[in-house]
Amino acid sequence: MVPSTINLDAYLARIGYDGPSDLAPTLETLARLQLCHATTIPFENLDVLLARPMPLDIASLQQKLIVDKRGGYCFEQNTLLMHVLLALGYQVTPRAARVLFAAGRGQNTPRTHLWCEVQLPGSPAGESWAVDVGIGGLTPTAPLRLGTTEAQPTPHDVRRIVPGDGPHTLSKFHQIHIDGIWRDVCEFTGEAMPEIDREVAHWWTSTNPASKFRQNILAALATRDGGRHTLATREYTHRLGSTIVERFQITSGEHLREVLATRFSLAIPEGTTFGIDGL
Image (cartoon, rainbow, N blue to C red; front, side, top):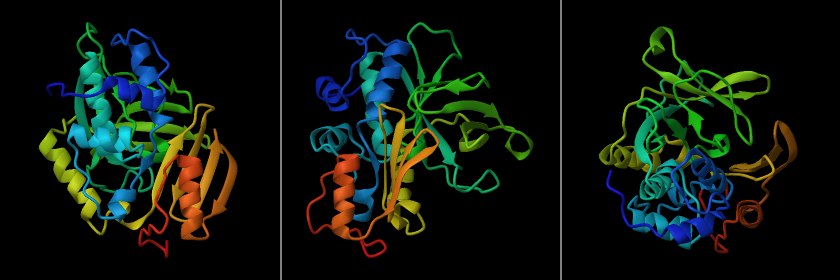
């Protein structure tokens, strides 16, 4: 990919970036960008439910996620970050994955998740990092080193990348350690996801009635203290690590808009309805 025009100052202000001031394309800068992004720009699918256009060109993404202070899902979030990283001098390859956390490894979920493989300038061939700011309440808050199976602590949890076996010998699995066990987050083969494939997967995800993004109101945001806010239609949860700090049911459309505003910094106009479960 060729870096496109992006307003880095506006992006850095939006995410409250507080990393190295020289923005040198180092691992330290990369890690701080990912943490700041994941704890500022919420994951959400509201425009899918409102049947609004969701273009992936960089001008539209900057308008929505930076200027309008909205969030988005993987195709929006990781495409924006990819352009930022390219502009800063990182080598970035968009990759495809299958999300497995809810379905389990035995299910053949669609390959409709976008993440970024990032290589630092001057690093040895084959040494790269998985960066993902768009997988909802499971969004990692630090880069994950590819090429090792060791557990990797992040500010919010512990992750690892492991090879598959049996029918999955060509795959690798991004896993999270949660509730005392390792669970698959997503499966990938290392296949690149060029722009045309991202557009097709984005269209399917946002328009197919069978897509979970058409069937649920979703929002998620990590916090700097190690917590996470998540919303799944009528259920809101605030976790700190593995501890549930608060959980309650959404009782009305007005209540939903209040939660979106106060917990996810999403200002939704009064009277907006999403057509899901009476909300």
